[in-house]
Image (spheres, rainbow over the protein chains, first blue to last red):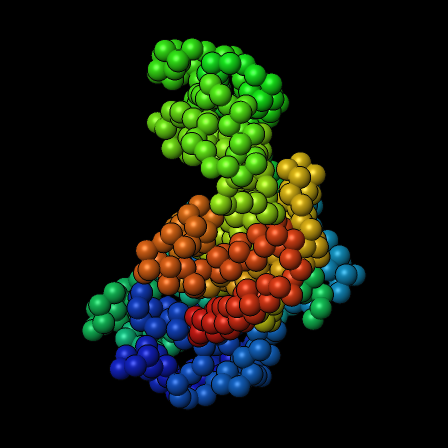
Length: 246
Length: 364
């Protein structure tokens, strides 16, 4: 197996009596598309926040891009990209201003910004939309732009929090092509989703139930293990056993 | 990492510039308020119609009437007879009638010589509008006292604002209000908007330190407030003729402190509210109401019930408005209002501390 980019050992987060994330362990390798599944309330978001350096674990350990989640949150932030379900660009700014802003946030120099922006716009066939206000773009385009901008600083890992929520199937497919492209380029993708067909696209999938990782393998092996036809069935089988209400 | 701070300030400025309608409102509100309070709404008494009853139009009487009619506040409506008084007042033709005694000249001379005498001038006023009646009587007395050179036990002198122009009083109040509006309300709404839309999440995952995000947000609003401050000061000085003899720099520096305080308030509101509507409501309830009611803007603090008088002590606008009023109208230098400055400074430090702490706590 190739280099490990995310490594988590018995990571736990408690809020008072409530154990949101209960001792989870897994490794994610470079260039992998790692699907992070779970019903609402299963602890996905909390786990992801810890991996992004936004929240400190109660116990356990983990590294992201070689930095410790316990002590090096700021370093982690510098080396990851993040895109959330909620559209994360500024609607009242133009395409170029958005690119420029995020390039600035990640400390790219002027010449780097120019170069990467040009390359990004060309890749997305967006060159003519450079000065368009983002709010007037169709949702699918926004989503693609959002992903491209989340990776403008060439992060080692990109966290995608339900990136395709509310997008039509056609656009979703196009979006996943972008994800594949990025993964082939060596970027590790850590993605949460509610769409089980998307789970099929992942290299490996983990399913969280009640704060614990109950299954982790390639989609094919998981289906075999649970004697299921689709990932949807696998997910339902596991989720049925959940004790926590949504 | 300086680059990312500047790109943030630029981004915030773009947000504001793109929203040109809000921009316009913010820039126009102070001007409109100043003009409205300065000219339209006023508690001054102007154009009061006065009639005179004088059995004999002696030199003394004519002299007194001349003074009344020359005065800008009064319009002399002519001489009338005793039996017309009631009709004139009832019909609203005049608000006040001045009745001179028949031997006015002789007795005025007596009074001037220090001989005690019975009243020689009667002022009959339509008191259905209390404010007008009160002010009109007072003005009339002042004018006529001079003419009768009557001895009086009191000598009243109106200092600082002898014409009792109400605009003088409102300018500091408007300043107290408008900066809270621009700094606190707009900053809090803009921070909460990012939370609501979801962009804040992305910013928090980025390597930008949260306090940088916040400061970058404050800078453009601070700049706008400075422009508004300068506009208000210029309007006050040259349009309304507010003296500002206490020195513009004192007023300016104190206002800057108040701006920072308002920004801190805005930040605090943004940590409490999670939607833009909530931020607006909290701003309106927690900031606007106390400023309108408890800062001395509309009602003198001395007239408040004890409970509210105590509460008014924690309203920053109260101290600011009071200090600006003193500096603008009384013309005292900033050192004379050091107490207000110290209180405002303390409040600023405390608010900044609390809001920054709350802001950081919420991130966890």
